[in-house]
Image (cartoon, rainbow, N blue to C red; front, side):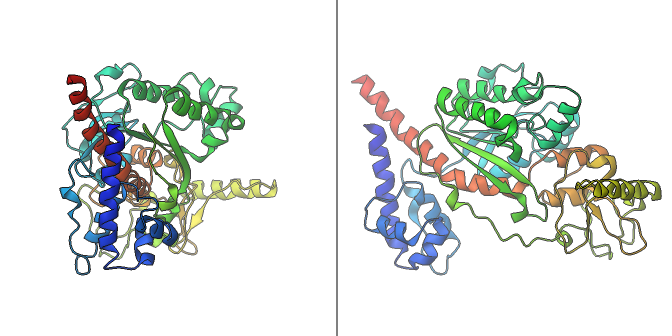
Length: 436
């Protein structure tokens, strides 16, 4: 019964703060802020049922944004409640896009694994060396991984992506769980979860994961997480276009060790009104150049090396014309300042064909610079790019739209903190009862 007592305490406190908050704001405004409906809020108000405990943190965040309207919410004083830092590990870390999203929501990274030496260089240039950065996770003893609250992993997607499957099929190679290399890396996540039993996890992959091998691949993943490991999972495809001018759909799989009231309905997805002008260099000499960048001339214009040669531009146009005549959509993606673009891929370094920036009539288009790629993925201007253009294109093409992860982390955090509160209140009571 100690867990039930812990939940009741959280819910009672949430109800108390909810009633106080409704003295200062309308149900319409508050329900939107909490990601629920007026009807549900009315039921919580009447304690039929009591609101879930995680609402405490959401109420605190809401009140913190309106200091002139609402008095400070005393949530921090609730014993064993939703305060404090949570820890996470960063598997298949790449250049830390997922890590940034969770750090922005109060998380602290305690272990990182990334096998690629160039990605390691970028990662180390941007994050403090306050814990181990392991290489390949496959031989790493899972029991040596530090205890953590949340496991994060953007596991390699090539075996499941449309492009990756097409390439492997053409070469007669296996893919997905039949793949002898990357396809089996999901099982490194499985082993880690089985050994460490984190309170929650978040996995990221390509949209095509759900349909690969007629759905059997995802069914295997889902069964492993739910039936074998016993976690409660929630998944959703999210388009990065809500946060940057890039159409980039990725599946997010969230799992919790215990049942919680997590719902994707509370996901805050801004209008898809972003345009390429938001991320392109201004080229008028007014742009502040981040330290280490070498993509612009002294007058602020983009260096000529990013403009396609006549030979490459002619090849891409002929290639597109050939496929258009054949009735398919293969070709380059030419965009202007007011447009949005296709998905940035790891192959962008080859010819840049999926995202070409128009430079006006009579001029060849250009590639994005690595800094523009960073912006397209939602990385901050302070993010350092210490590698070659080729490596930078691969790294950003393999990364995540960081604001998407930030929003998912925001949605997950209250439930992670709720589970921590349950554990903090349960363990002492269990110890006491065993002593009796």
